[in-house]
Structures are given as structure tokens and as C-alpha cells.
Image (tube, helix red, strand yellow):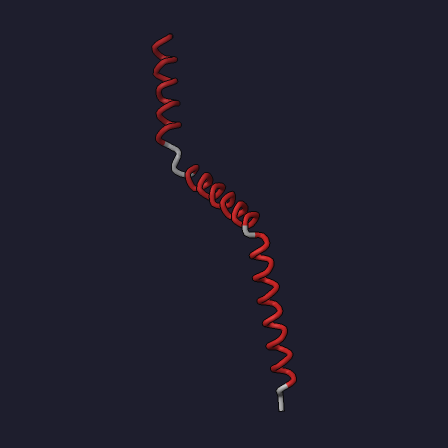
Length: 70
């Protein structure tokens, strides 16, 4: 009886250790999302200023293009 439980436990542990191919992708995805969130928090002001500058440039260029139409 003890031998059969030991054999079953060994099979379960081996299956767990060697049958984890899909789980690595989930862990990697979670880590990458965490890194992206940390970078966004750290560079929040720089990102906000960059987006504001880009939108202002687009707006000014659009106004200039509309005003310079013959």
C-alpha cells in the first residue's frame, strides 16, 4: 500500500515538474505587464509632456494646413 502511494506521489511530482510548458508564458506576460506599469509610473510626467507636445504639434500643423489652402 505504501509503495503504491509512493509511486503515485512520484508520478504526480514528475508530471508537475515536467509538464509546465504553458505556464511559463503566463508568468512572462505578468512580469512584462508589471514592468510596463512600473515604467509608466516612473516616467508619468515625461510621458504626459510628450503626449501633450505631440498633440499640440499635430493641432498646429493641422491649423496651418487648413489656413494655407488656396
